Amino acid sequence: MDEKQKLKFIKDNFWKKIKETGKKIPFLKDVIAMYYCLLDENTSLSAKASIVLALLYFISPVDAIPDIILALGYTDDAGVIATTLLIIKSQLKPEHYAKANESLSNEKDS
Image (cartoon, rainbow, N blue to C red; front, side):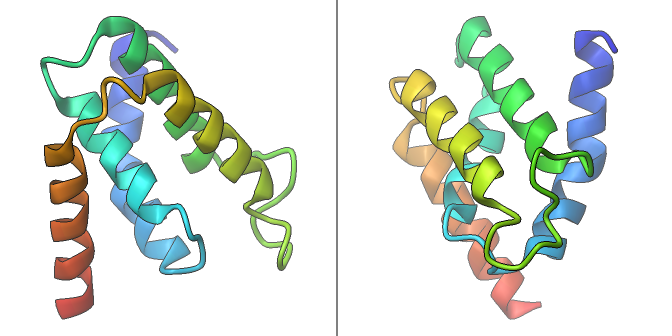
């Protein structure tokens, strides 16, 4: 899968995965902010590469620990997201989190 295919996969499946997880994961706002950071033309290519890998892992149904296992299912995803957040923290801007908050608010309304 090349970079364009990876990005298309993320764009096609991201919001579906967010709806599936609902509020089950405490790091949902960070995941959504990372998505907006990925779409930001000012984000560095290295940060975008890290975000793509993290979001592919998050979206993918194939996990080290399957998401359907109660209490443990998202621990591997949390580790990947937390590590990526550390790597890209200088790239995440307040506007990415503002968009994430807006998306979460809109989700509550629908």
